[in-house]
Amino acid sequence: MSMQKTDLSPAIPVIIGGNIAVIPTDTIYGVVAQATNPSAVQKIYNVKQRDPAKPFIILISEVDDLKLFGINPNKTVTDLLNSYWPGPVSIILDCPNPQLEYLHRGTNSLAFRLPQNESIRKLIKATGPLAAPSANPEGLPPATNISEAKAYFGDSVDCYIEGDVNAKPSKIIRISSDGKEEILRA
Image (cartoon, rainbow, N blue to C red; front, side, top):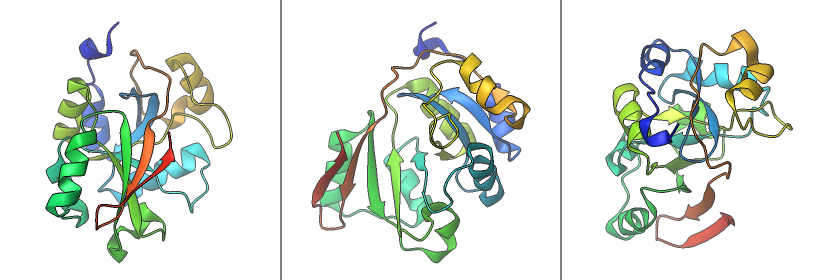
């Protein structure tokens, strides 16, 4: 089953309802929830038993979604973003907004990815940006299929969707507000 054909629509009401789903992303399986919903984001931390100091990658459907997080990149940064996106590259941008502490966890920065995959972008357009860490409890390998994800999370996840993943996490780059790039994970 090609990811291009994967029907992610069953996850839409689950996510809009403030719950969490495991879906195939453009890289690996992710545990996803609305990034703009603090209680949904906290559910992911609880399910993953994740270090509360570590922020999640946020999937967006277009560069304009950054404005929802108070991020208005200048032309230099926007041109850089457009050179990497859409694609399997997560980009860390400054986000000092104290109201988004539930997302940035005091780091004053957030990592975003604009997936190449059309099905995922459609899902994000319907639900809003998604907090989307890998589908695994902290310290264990990411799930490579839905059976592994269900073994990890069971009934604590509200929806599971099977699909193809490429099994490689995204490249991570930090881009400063002046356009300086630093590769954190190749």
